[in-house]
Amino acid sequence: MQRSLQILLLVAGQRIWPNRLVSLSSRSMIISSGQVAEQASCSIYVLDPARDLGMPACNYADSAIWPHALKKTGLLGGSEPLQHWEYQQAVHFWLEQVIIDNNAQTDRLASADLIYVNMHCYEIWRAGKWWQVFKEGVKDGVDPELYRQQTMNALRSWPQWRQSNGSRFVVAPYNPALPRSTLDALRPCSSSPFVIASEHTLFCEQKLEAHAQQGLLLPYVTDTHQEGFDPLAATRDTLLFYRGGCAPPPPSPNSGRFASGKLLRRALVDAAQTSNATDVDVRCGCDICPGALPHSQVLARMRASRYCLVLAGDKASSRRGTEAALSGCVPVFVGPPWHTVALADDIDHAASSVFITVRRVTWVVANASQGRPESHPKVLADWYLDTELPPGAMLHVDTLDEVVDALRALPPKVLAAKQAALAREAYKQYWLPAPGEAKSRLGEIVVKKLCDHAQALKDRGIIPPHPTPLWRKLLAE
Image 1 (tube, rainbow, N blue to C red):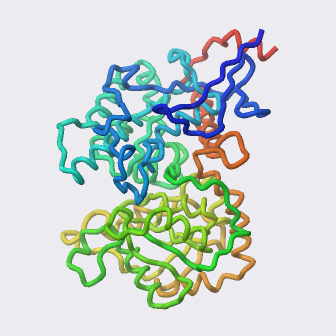
Image 2 (cartoon, one colour):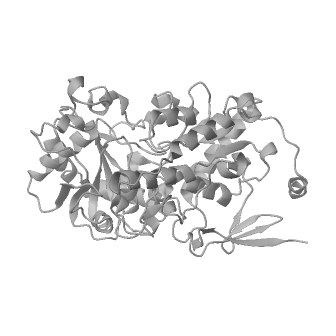
Image 3 (cartoon, one colour):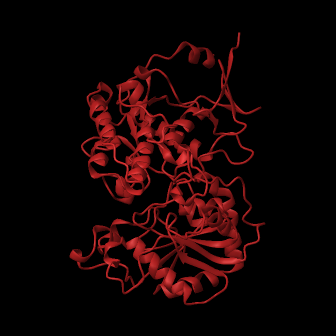
């Protein structure tokens, strides 16, 4: 007799995936009508530090945890309250959702192939606390970073960690602004956990050829979801668009305090504006600064543009590339230093984006005493490109003054080909299902990568064989 259980995904009483009804039966998981999700090839236990270790829990309705859902704080340039799962670094939350969605979750810790340590609570708490301390002057002595470190200290004593040197654990030190002590606790370089990161600077070994052995570089969460686009059909009168925080204009004495990415942004914006072209909409403007363009308008202008700049900033990663792709605007990466390229082995960025390298680099501070590590010339090598491009895919210019002309010179057929590739590839950066689809394409990629990692550990004898559950034996018959 077949049993089915319908589960409506709810968070804090709110439906987060509209019209997504999950049916769990003895044979399969059905996600929306007529679509069946096969059993994943690995089993993943989602570890909740509060439930499994007795650590503090989060009440997301509490303004001390997440104030942005209750009022218009303007976080990330939004003009509406922001739910915690919409936060750009809420990757911990979405990792759990895609593990569930792809039928990889198990509630049996003892027989799980992998253990995913879900730190969403403490990442959200950290973001809420940052706002309260630095924007509202509220201090309560609570330190969510300490809870993350205590969680990892406890897990390193588990037999699963000791037996595998941490390789059966999936951790996500995703926020590039993590304190060094927290980063070292989450992915100790003396161990080998599988790392989910926003940029390669968070890996222990920072070499392109070593990325796949350490983990995954995943895209940010888009806080304003783009529900479908057609980059070929849309009217796109703007050649090039950009909005983002920059270093102050020269000759400001404070420029050296800014990262090389911010210095590059300023130099490129200034160079683009000298053209006085009416189809170039390139300006500096941080999301939370006074007078900033509302984020909804930023996205609207992306949807009206053919090319969108994707530039490093304070750190190598941001949501710019994802938002440009989901807006149907061809991402334009300019470096060095380079902005992160997410999932480079699974997304055809060479076909769907433009890459421009500039020979004459002026956006570094050679005197270390006058700058910071992120603006020292060393950053040009440290923030390397996360993909090997095929011959001819990289455009070369001498100076930033040539970037706009280089884009304008691209033939219409090149733009059309990149827009067509973007239509194929963009939703691989989207944590929700594409319109008309049952599951997130990004989620399917992530779970497959995790299961490939689990299989590699099984092949090496690191994951011991588990007894086959009776229900799986019956399914195999």
